[in-house]
Image 1 (cartoon, rainbow, N blue to C red):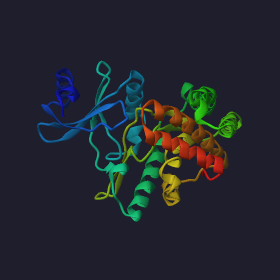
Image 2: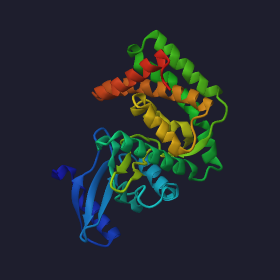
Image 3: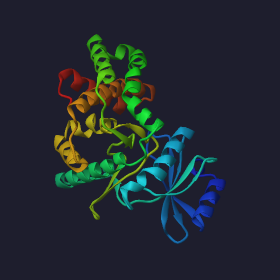
Image 4: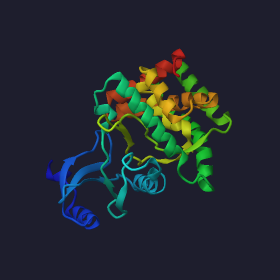
Length: 297
């Protein structure tokens, strides 16, 4: 770890004061393509924590709110606990939780099913947490309309990366988001995917991390990442997920999922080339191909 990646002395001093003991940096725990800086730190008594610095105030505010008001519903060991936060540094001091990201684990098919079932069950707890009253309910009810309103700008940015038929399909699916009946509302993780789901084979225990995109919205929004990713090739994992979640999607939610996936795919075709990220571009292209072929479920 180079000096340029080290937390500042002031930030480490803050962490030490909050934890009541001296701390040292163990490793860089950040993920590629994410702007947040995450450092695994160790207290002088050997206990590990994570020091996370948000790239923007809104992400700091969202994660702080989530960790204080909704994430505790997941229970000990199933999500980080917030030990302290610093608006000055946009920093969060978090407890460590057991397990590795699903993207870093090699598992048997049976273990994969178990991990997805537990992940779905935990997400159901998160979705039911949080106070959905007043302006928060209004925000959640507006979520699909806000997503549909982004269709025009997304399509303009994608320009010639789409065929006329694809542009027509995306517009049609986005318009459906405006006319769907009210859908189940939830407190969303906001980035629910295998990169944010930990699994401990030893404990048989799942945990969610990374709540910087958490917000109130429609529950179906939290299933876009899995639907355009791992579930495309592994419908058995989708089945296990919703077994854990406690219900399958309503027909109206399935329609919404297609519209949200289409908008996400167009955004991938914009962001992928902009960041020289072929994997993101390919993911967007594959999702659009599946929607055009009518095999997106």
